[in-house]
Image 1 (cartoon, rainbow, N blue to C red):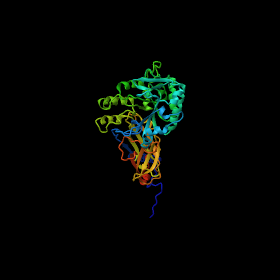
Image 2: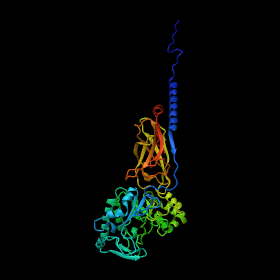
Image 3: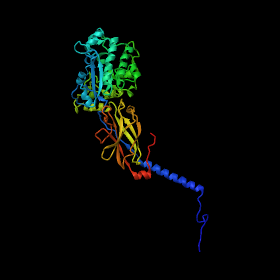
Image 4: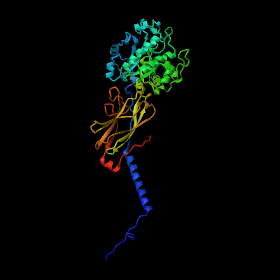
Length: 488
């Protein structure tokens, strides 16, 4: 006997549209749960600890005299000053060779140092002398004053003399053409005017010119060194308008520095006829550097031992990036003052470090990898130049197989704030294996890693390892790839 069952018989039932819809929805939910589970499992958060102690990084710290042969303390800056008489002995003839040899500029360039520079026209000394060239003295018909006072002896030119202003523009342009192109001269302290180029003169010397004429000198520097940070001795109105830096040549002196900080906070009088000659710049340090030398009257013992707490507080309130040329560079390393010096050097300038990194553990074969880095800065200042940042992918032998610049503005990593950057690295051509990611801040002069982040690092080449991932064909094709979300 044969039996047959029709399609509409009791043995087979059609599922209703509602049932199919419910099953489909359930399937979507299950897949979504699996995807969420996988994304959470695949995404790794790598946290880092900050290093303690001083880190001799570029563009900050001590700035000893460039003429020094050896120093006890580490440094990455050197201080160079130059009189007009030295550089232009004859009109239009610039003696760069003698200047560079005396200041050892070839040595410092090779050692990857940077220069703090000041051009001066009047340096008080023990004997009557000129710091401007004889030919210039003749052109201005001796316009100025020979002085002999508590500062010393010298000649104070008439800075408002139009011939002096004109020839000053020529020499600053020549200096800018020579040293204002590649960043080797990192900070220019606006000198030129006053004793030691500090924009003040002793009573009985030639008074400084009015603000409109002084601003001509500033604009000459701005034009000659367009990519270089310029620093002024006081927060003049033009410094506030142009976001210039400042320098305090009485660093660590409580009375003098307190007055200087009050100028920065509130502005004030510069000359009796300029009641508002100084402008408030309380947040100026966020855009331009603060420097200056250790107050010459103070001993190293006073600064780094007896009054160490006071020194630290003044340094912090000033947001100091460098100290020089006077400073503790020749204090015995490891001696009784080393602890105090280390405390200062651990605070000064920037201290950029990795806070945490988000990146996947596994990456889809043939795809890019997405990485998110959070930086922090425990220093008292940012870094003021946006040096390139490069990311690397290393194979299991430690060799780079991918490198790429990151769109990151170092200048925006301010103290006390978190700074996030996300980027993709092209790894589509890499084979299944485990890889390591690294990042480095690059010196734009030589193209090599140059800045040590304040994190533990296993590499000796200043490339900071940030984590590892694996390209896995099986996982990739069965589970998919995590993509970082655009969220903080």
